[in-house]
Image (tube, rainbow, N blue to C red; front, side, top):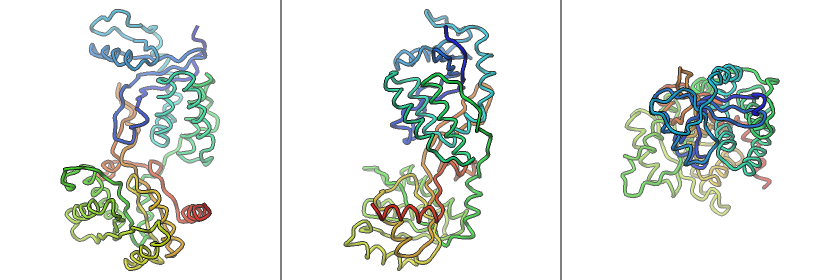
Length: 380
């Protein structure tokens, strides 16, 4: 009735797509998702007597039916039982794809999470459209044999398996290892003259800014960059984040008393009638004719960020590297017996605590890429 077993994903964490960037954990973890020719089946391996409580979540979210392997300590009426040999079959099939699935959770985490949420939680007619979009997005991803390209191709095939029940082919997939982000920074350290730090705006009404966790994390990230690159750091400020940037500078100086930390104001840089004022302030800070690393800490006013790039490259003749470091992202976890295979992590905290993060978990643009981007923005 189910037909041929086409693919298996193990330890699938389900995240709400609209809050995945807010450091939100998963609302359900599924031990196995089995894609058969005629159906998608969820399999739960009961490891202790309390696991049957997940049944309450399954009923409330109105997802796919979950079949259970092993007898929970408390017998529950109408708890669907899986065939005894299905766990072993699922595990054997999963081992074929383990390396690629773990890579996708790191290098294409948002699309991987969206694909699973869509296929397992949304009505079929909606899921069909979203999965088609995922396939198209991944199909147009970089063809290079790097981590992002391999991960995107895997997610493309996973979405297609969910949508039209086609077996995933290993053709064109190979195991790759990315570059650790500290190694990328080490390569840059000998080339750049200064760091421009663009912090995500933080709203904390009624709270002393120095006590806000997210601003403390920004200070930790900035301190980490100063340590690795051994260069001056300029916090890019505007009217919306002026007090936040003042607090941020103070926190960094508490951590690194000898570091050269300054602020540079760019108000008006995205207004034709005031651009010259902002450019003059950048010039007065010595940010002309240099090689710079512009770090966007998760998010920034996009109009101002693009206008700043244009001024740095076109007007001030700088070579600019761009590095976007998200605050929170899904990361693959080290495989362990019965443990989860991915989790929501603060990437800023991961770096400041000297844990591993890969370059493909960030967005990095080399100066030539930045020049091309600026050229395209000019024509719009």
